[in-house]
Picture 1 (spheres, one colour):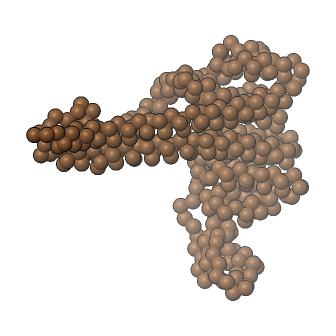
Picture 2 (cartoon, helix red, strand yellow; picture 1 turned 90 degrees about the horizontal axis):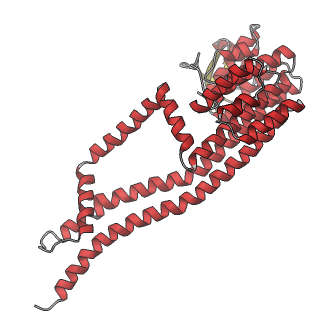
Picture 3 (tube, helix red, strand yellow; picture 1 turned 30 degrees about the vertical axis):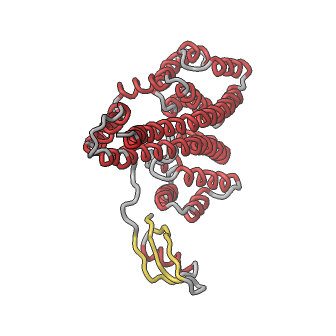
Length: 408
């Protein structure tokens, strides 16, 4: 199955263009003709996604996560309405506007039509479909509850999408303020402060200490800007390389958990992901040890992942879930307590959902609190820098004015 791009004219006489999936150019033309589209140009799209490398937490490593979440909900709705899988996949391909996702789902549909399971067809794209998706689809197909599993996956994906949007939305303004503040500061030092040199170039008066410091900083930025850019870029790529190593990632994740204010938020996000993912997988029929194998990859923190791996080993030996998690010291007492209650009452899935909802709410509150604190802090820093620059300019001007006004 391939994707073809076309241009043509609709039955209403209006120019139209788009994509269609078909086995051949001839088949594509026939499909479009049935829709009343007269083709003027058609060609096969090349360079589409084939097999991808392993992904992390997100459902979509190579496609827009919002589009993928919408696709999962559409597929869940159609399967729940007892629409055959091949027809549902065909509808999904037609409805999506994301060219990468359209290509992936076209290939998935073609593989399903050849007789393979949906899970096996999606395994070819591990950067698009995460281990969570594959594991749950396998269970859903094996148990005959694919519709229920897809609904759970849709709910799970939408909850993750909402959390991601909250974090991005809350951080957008502070990041914008930081960029704007940095740009203003650089402008002042690179263009405004040097004017002082011109004003006092012919004067023999001694400049105030603050003015001299500002002029030194300005000269350094003006003359060494290329060095500063190289230093910033080098530091960034060195940091990326470092956290890309196993030891570096473990060290950075340990530091992140201990950062004042931020560490608590990082832990809450990790715990929320752990609880929601484990609840979703257990509720879909995935075995506990298999679910933990997947969940440990979802928790994007090496320290907590290590604690989960150690806990899994204890659980495989017959211990409860709560005990090893509590012993690790990396999980909040409320989580281990709720898990213990869930194990005793047989309502582990429900308890994990309660914990996840509670931590989602706490994350939302914590992000809003941090944003409220960051905004005035950044404004104060920017105001302080601008005040220092202004003071460094006006101090010698006042002295020069006093000299000019003094007799003799």
